[in-house]
Length: 209
Image (cartoon, rainbow, N blue to C red; front, top):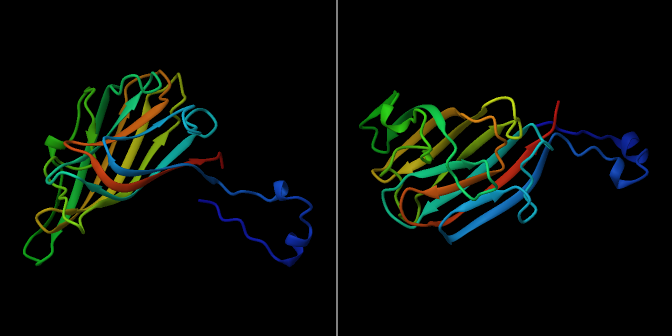
């Protein structure tokens, strides 16, 4: 994210608010869950922008808390403005974990978590991991590259950390692509079972550098 710095001379030279640079990262939309079946960002709906305005879109996932115990947090993509979330995806993932009592720690790849030409929702981590205890949640970032392209597949990547219901800190990395040359114009976040009890997702657009 670019930082815009000012000194006394630069501030005194400003003649209107519109002449102040806004930096590279722009907040587009904030959605907050409250026993929500999903959180969906659909281009053209409720002030959401998800087109060629920006080449990169970043979703900040903040304290996402499930209503149901032992679930996974997932996402899927749409090429028809949210009528269907079924874009074909191929993905990879790896992660690391550490137990609270320091009894166990590891890093590795889990083939059960990835997709190979599947329209299913992709989990940020495996099913049955995130608990619904009062202090349990997941936070992280999901990045989508050039979703409006009608030439290339749609690359994405994520990194999240979550409080595993077995008292582990688990850091997971997922990357892949939506295997379509159609524009992606909606992204939906869900739990593998039950509602999203609480949490916030912020959508940002990143300008060309």
